[in-house]
Image (tube, rainbow, N blue to C red; front, side, top):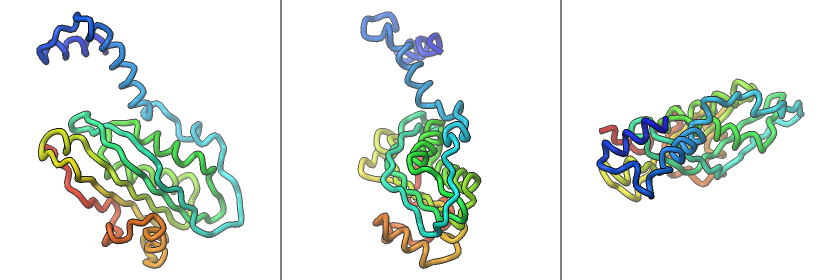
Length: 199
């Protein structure tokens, strides 16, 4: 990987041997390995048995989870907040494991729509809840640094499953609790509220 990065620097018109860049290939390799560590993560190991039987059937919400990912189209960062809710049937997941699940899927080359769905599906598969909802708000540097160069735009995506998809009151309660009700007029799976420029 370091040889590839040195070649890339040269192709960009730089001198890979100058003082400021001589260690850049090593740093970039280390950074990219970390930022794509989700490919090498095992969900069961991340959860580490933190699934508990409990008599609780009310909504569980973890909101304002920071996430950082790389756009698969330009390898530029996108980042923001993730809000997750689920309604347990027989089991709950340890609260600290939910942000870790977000990290697993964020640390891959992604698009926000797929990332939103993957998080929802992982919780559905591991907890078998009555419903799960995920809303993500993301700022995309491929929009603000290049392309349309709209610095203040952001994308909102949602995935609603089970009771959150079929029950409007449940869905609206969740959206009210995360203060985004007016931002999302419908509950389509991965309902993108801003178009990303692929050019």
